[in-house]
Amino acid sequence: MPLHTAEALILRTYKLGEADRIVVFLTRDRGKRRGVARGARRSRSRFGGALEPLTRVGVTYFEREGRDLVTLDYAEAERSPLSSSDPAACVYAEYFAELIDESAPEGDPGETLYRLGVSTLDALASGAPARELARYFEYWLLRLQGVYPPHRVCARCGHGLDDDRQGGAGLVPADSCFVCRRCLDSAHPRPGTAGPLLSCEAVRFLRGAAAVAPERVAELGLGESAGRDLALVHGVLIASHFEREPRSVRVLRDLEQ
Image (cartoon, rainbow, N blue to C red; front, side, top):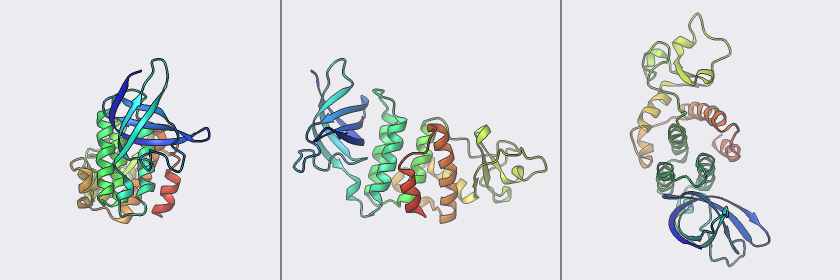
């Protein structure tokens, strides 16, 4: 029964029996794992607060050949969203963790996805603005999944989408592309194909997000209206990619209203 030691991100937990929990966690080198944390629901559990979503932990676990569930022996929190001064940080952390869980295949090493989760946690815990960080995280998650449409130029006329003269951009879900407002408003639009719209400010945020680390997200600037634009567009892309709306997005939507 091999013993493994790893750095991991907690993605979710759920109840098992009277006192235990199933824990879903993402490791840097061995991908996503599911394990049993014995006694984790007891008031004096040795796991303490280490099993909260998006907590970075040091774990040891036993793995038996032929069994899907490993046995968690130890977990110690190394960085937690609970350390953020923002009372909404845990809501965002649960949302980020759910999207990572949906994206990470079982047992497939995903260091890039792991690094995105860790850097997002570090930014959140260090006080980065949570709303802007959510739009940044959504952008990068969808980009790593290979489903974020090109956002620099209009898919029809080729003009830059951040050019104020083009009036921003509109998502065309059927073609998975962005088209400038001038093309959307042209004499021959494709009826019924236009999705949510992005202002030029929102497009410029995306261009900045492609080039900076998450802890610098506040430098990009994102007004309330442009943030709502991005939230709507990303909501459509996420629901289409995962074929459902994430559970935690409803709580997040209420929080951001």
